[in-house]
Length: 112
Image (tube, rainbow, N blue to C red; front, top):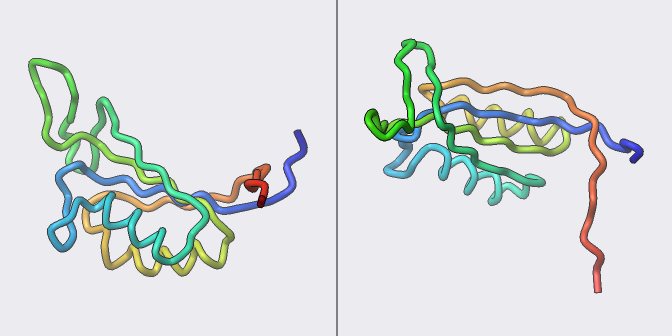
């Protein structure tokens, strides 16, 4: 496979119970990314993790957390991601925003 495009991968780390305007932060972020026409977004729910306060959040049966770690990954061209980071700075109050350049082979659906 030949990698033909360099794109940006934006990763947002937050907690499951973090909210913006009454919505889970991850949902708010994905809906806004879609509204802005970004190429794609995926949300991952972690099994275990900790953040700035070093408090362990886990999905173990005896310690069922209501605040598991959430990761939102968004990919697109650099200029669109930079613009979206400006939006995120007003939204993400607990967590982290990470951006990196990645090489990718982009597959587009065949138009019929």
